[in-house]
Image 1 (tube, helix red, strand yellow):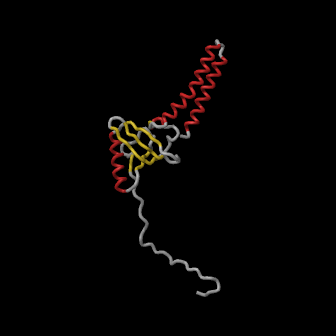
Image 2: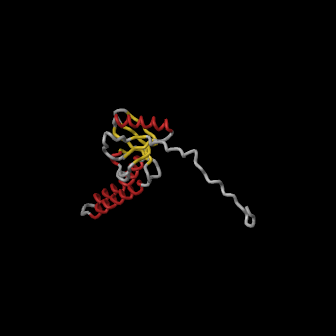
Length: 171
């Protein structure tokens, strides 16, 4: 939600500039007043529209700030056949998860379901490779369950523990 106040400040500044242009224009007072009122009414509508968009998943094509992310963790998904693939992604270097929508792709949906099954069997999560890249080679999977990390070796030879010897006592 950190972008909403910044975007609103930008929209409010543009509305204020348009209002000032309307005031300075060589027009009648009624037209100047209408321009100023329109600029003032624009601000609550701009804020309300930005806040309304917070609850909607963002199309991946419109992601500009995080578009260079190499991978993202898929926290949840919903497949709506012939409509869209809805994802809840945890992006690197972003504190809160974000909702995105991908256009429907049967192969991508099958990959996602297969990765979810593998992740459930392994007890891990699902990763998405290049989440905002418009196209990938067909050979490379977009969704995958990362391999389970190897367990530490069991028969490690450890040195004996150090025993504290108080000063003045011989061992």
